[in-house]
Amino acid sequence: MVDEAQDLHPAQWRVLRAAVPPGADDLFITGDPHQRIYDSRVSLAALGISVAGRSSRLRINYRSTEEILTWSTRVLVGSSVGDLGGEGEDSLTGYRSLLHGRRPAAQGYPSAQAEIGALVERVREWLGQGVGPSEIAICARFNTTLSGVQDELSSAGIPSVRVRDQPGAEVDGVRLATMHAMKGLEFRCVAIVGVTSRAVPFAKEVTPPEVDQVQHDNDLLRERCLLFVASTRAREALHVSWSGAPSPFLSFAVH
Image: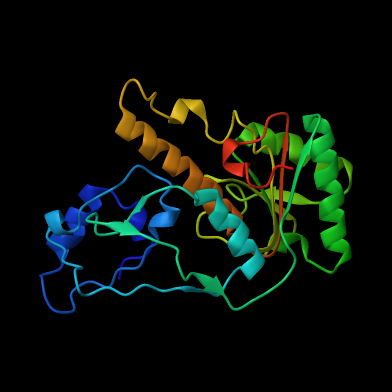
């Protein structure tokens, strides 16, 4: 059984193919190409793994509310996402949730300090609604941003813990994680901070178009997917914020 298949490297697929003799029911693979946050596009057919006519698309989301799902998918609007087989395109058409709740909040602030101050108040609000500290996550593109958030939470008397340091459920405190570290996790409430034009997309992770236009487009898609993944970690409430110029991926949310 293979999960998170969209992020496996071709070498890893070759190991799996070599470990399991080809057969009618040799591999069970699950994955979502819209959550591809690493540059690991492959053609499964070229690697000896046949999925043509043997796949099915799951369209019901059991984690996030319809409101969060609708908001998050708009981050990917206009992008072409390749399917897991590497032979065609995948689509979110018909993708839906059976749950409903509040619409995500997206807000810009004049300074990073003002943004973090508003974030602390939002966390207080969630805690006041009976949400446990460990059911809340705050994520950002960079660890430096999280350090500032952790300092402010500490000053406000709100316990927090870095996912990379103490991921166990037994540790009480608001979870802090980078966008990449949010992969595979879920929380009742999620706040994404620092979603600026300088952070998402992060220029150092994007190939200049004059160097390679195809890779440039792939890199931008990967950056969009990263924000999509972070947003869909929220089950009930999503708060997205930035200071200064917002990410161009949030053009639909900027008023």
